[in-house]
Length: 373
Image (tube, rainbow, N blue to C red; front, top):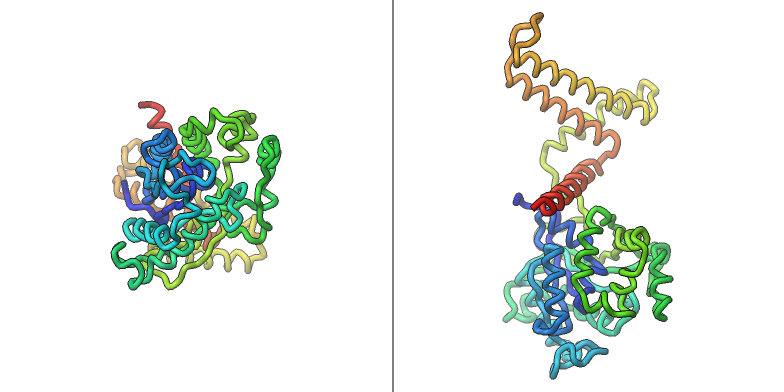
């Protein structure tokens, strides 16, 4: 697989199933695009049923093997028999163990719970938020936890959250069992990520947490009883608040579906787009008229490429036989004109838009291939 333009991700979350409920779409999208993804789970033991379920869910998401700290769940002592509850474990110990994973994996971005313990304020969510924030800062400082490996500072910490406007159908589902969503004001959300293209993958990963689906109060169980369209709406968007962690080490992007470091070709595309836009604006054309003319130019280039194919086959009696090199040149002109068109419509967002569309198509193609096997 070719290197991904998307940043590598490490999610540090409290329980098995948090990884898919809070960040499953982003993890699946990045994994499908070739980015490194991993998950650290603070509670439950690997040899329990929930440890096995976590392994199955991570395999579906493409997020590697479980990395479990094996502290006890605050509300389920049998989650790790004989071990300290996460909320009671020595702070320095927990932070140091997370630092070890950060330095080993060297992620560009770390994801964890928000400061309100999203979704419902579980004490393990709140504690995981606290220790992960400390670990992200400590991981870049060489004098802290030197035994944990070479220092590494992730570029950003993203807090999985839920805006007030996005509660939607999730609120009534949780209300049935006496729970509420701890949402935040909309203006505190810095990344709203459409993960609808991998919602089916996300749902399969949720179903891998069988004990939670078969229960009554857990969110996987509530989702399993929802109508398909309602469940899709709930799963198709994920929200995050970004916390910068400068100084920066390594490649860092501005969002979870980021603008990659673009090749020099986009500099030329941008100059052409700006030139054509300036000329058309001087002629008094509206943006919509300019875009229409530019799309027709793409069609013209396609026609010229088709004529070049006819010439290469020598089937036009009015013209001498052409070459396949000419066909390749016309195809290149078509591609360049298409890129200029995107730039004129989207400006600096065009490279990121094209990258995102390619990633979505790649994910759908891989799902089709898996379905055919």
